[in-house]
Image (cartoon, rainbow, N blue to C red; front, top):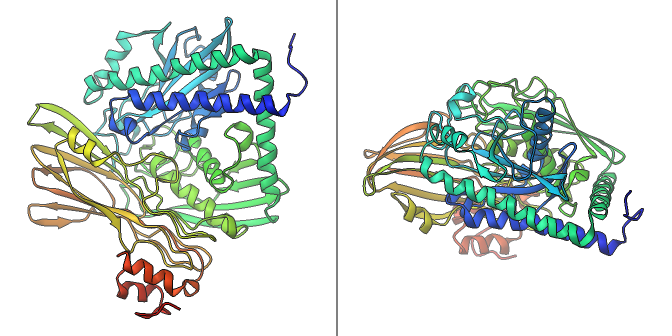
Length: 571
């Protein structure tokens, strides 16, 4: 019999909500601090959360985890529960940790590896703790897993269904051996594996302490009330949007195999306190790796809406008023064996962009122009002759955010889908045989507007010794991020390879793989700027002059974007 009250007092509810968030934050921090790979330890490409025992819905996620993993791990937990019920995954016991990276089972791409731990309290299975970390390599055609030309998922790396990597807190040496035999730099993965497991184990201790203070019955009551409140708050935000239908479209440059854009067609219908997102009319499944699995597609919509309404708590209730339809039969609902390496890092951002552009018709004062919309995935793999050790370097980069009704866009912001940041240059140069010749803003890349877009990043990497293979999966190389309310588009993504005294650009602009690189060769990348907001003619001459003085634009470039500005004019 429950000893929880019918409803909890607001103070207790707030304390429990903060406690749950703190558990997740501590898991995130522990994961990053203990991880070996810079992509996790420095770039924070990971997330941790707490999920319901019966259907996997999100109970809580911290503020420090990648937003795109919010929805995907919810679906991943649900798939694990289904497979356990069907006898296709082992029954959970205390100390068990499942490993899974299958994209078609509530995932993203193969490099995002999920660990799932059943949490027991007083002998009862109460909930699931789960985290996702981006491994720098999972095998496949190219180092790093971002195969720009893959035509089936097997070419992208090792695909794992849910299996118990830890059984009653002891790692299964045979499963570990299978994993290590199929990935590059396998000896380094044990550090990330132990860090990922340790984060969940820490979360279990902290969650146990929280339950001891408040009782299991009270905690369950709090979960229910927090979910209801999140749904009510999201519903209230939606209710303030004018009823109507709002359409938009966004384009992926190409799939990496066929040099033709992929279209995301979106119609958003708002009725009462519900938003329906209909993707009917989007492109068919593609040959290359720019397909998106359904969990990533849904999560992309969730995170886009939360960008607009950031005060909504992170739990399943926030997603309840968001209905998503029309993805079946399109490249936004990939089925086996479609390749998917670009889904989480790139297609997800085009989906979010389509959401922003559609809702800009309804609530322009609350929506930004399109952000850079690419994670800038760059992988370099080889053997360092100085050490004799193999390496896989994974580089992600920021870009410009779109301008909005209040101010200019942020420069060098993290990607739309996450909080991951570029690893420090000093760390990358210490761990890999590379030299960053320069890192700067992509000057002039922000779209014109009353409030201009933020600027992307411009960097160049030189291989110092040995030979290596380079691969890219980026986007917005064909067209820049669009502006809204009359604003101009941001600059496109640019990739250049400087080799043997010559420079070439990939056929698919910012997607290519297996490029042979030797000492002295250089890779140059310029990420997109954000779109502009509002009529450029409304921008003050003082703001334009300030940007020129800071070196963001030359006077000639400024006059092209803002014809009303004249040198020496401040009025």
